[in-house]
Image (cartoon, rainbow, N blue to C red; front, side, top):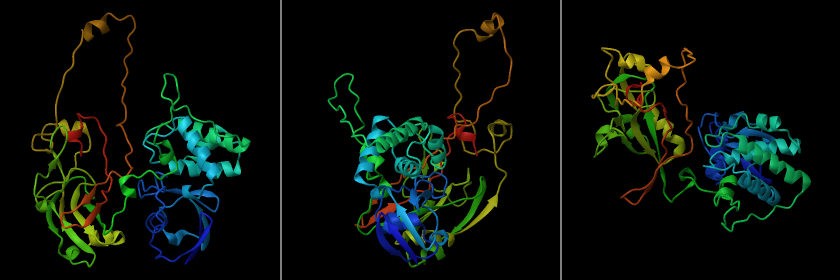
Length: 380
């Protein structure tokens, strides 16, 4: 049992050691400012202040001390809320807003100790917090401005929201995103919700020979276990081409680590992994295609029926050869760039109302690959 002081209120926290602090704070205490971005301790969106130090709350309770003090955005003073709200809105530091509450708390933990932090100190305080939108500069600006208002006890100026030409209007949703009460789908709850999660392959390329869901279906919390054969409509998804399997069926081949094999719906979110572990999948591992050069080689395994190249386009303007030949200076060098690595973590999940009048919450495990459009069809 942990004696927890949460936002100034004493609470006895008696949960199994496998429970994560974030689950207790979000599900039991309904503190939705704490965002579950990655569940792996990598993004910092779940940051809270524990005993004066900004820490990630996706840790298991077994790693915590017996007596701890936890502060979330909801526990800030009204003055702090007003200051951080203004600072983040005035500097334009809020975009999607998913990471901002964690940024605020990491900044607060520093400002509480160092009232006039340098930009380098702010950067260091945010090193565990990832933002996919702003590039961090405006977030650092916001914390620097917030520290100034708190340090000097300056009154918050009124924003000109007239909408006239030249007026500096704050985002209308900046406050709710900064203070974390704006709802993403993962923050919503409905009566009688059930929870879902996908079983994903650990092999980049493998033949799925057999999927046995019998044991998983018998789990007392299992509401439903679905495979590709249970999809009544089209199993293929996609924008430019419908070539992405919603679920890999028996007899089909996986294309990347994380391809979905089955879906589980459970009465209890905490037992999802137990049910998933009961699904037995027989694989035949195949040699993966690991880069575009391999994929374009003669005789390369086909990742899709249509082949490994989605589309070929040629755009020609002017005479490049003549221009180079007639140029005064020529530089010959090999240049290469990495694949774009766009982090996707905010909870892009559906909230479904089922026909049997039961609410169903499907938590989609986030597996995201961002590569150039031309490569998408032959990247394994």
